[in-house]
Image (cartoon, rainbow, N blue to C red; front, side, top):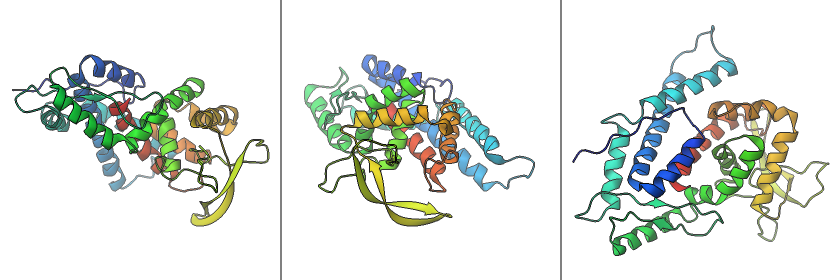
Length: 305
């Protein structure tokens, strides 16, 4: 039986797309699966375009950070427009996942993991009505094991805090979570006190002379003249992740050097390169790493929130 067509996508990285996908997941999990597959294909095509451009010799007539930013935006929109066409990668993903999620002898329907607003250790799953109770329970257990403690689990736990930061700064929640993921190794390498307690500092924000709150000293890697060096630095410590996201939002809003970053809008490459130019980190490849992590977060966000 022929699969329904993958719906055409709108503007690249439209922040409202996540809300729409959440609503579709509740009303029609199969339609949500098709949309998520289309977004994955778009991200895949974007990376292909980026690799092709990097392999091409650059002319002296064009170049610079401004040119790269707009080329990145063009590639995002182009990949979004091309994704989801008949016979493409998205259609293959839908076909494969439909087979895995549906028990033998029934229609292929995908179950979608629900959001976890309080950051629980496991993911409840709302199965499709076509799944019998036993198959639905197996699917729930399988998804819970895969998502718990994984990158997808990190996205779901931090998403409510990122939404609050988005409301105060205008930075898309996926960008905020992506930066937290890069700085903390998806939560697996977050800053801790000497007794093992989490400092909840997912953004690697240091404690300067004006910081009056709690602090923690840890070894970190800094780049001097492009070379990595290990050093001990003093970082801010928080009582919760909510407090950490709130402090990050305050830093972004209050510090003038981040004003151009906040104006980057929905552009992943513009935000990532802007963060590097603003000096958020000393890693000379920080912008590249941040862009890659945000793109990964965007995909995970569409599947888990």
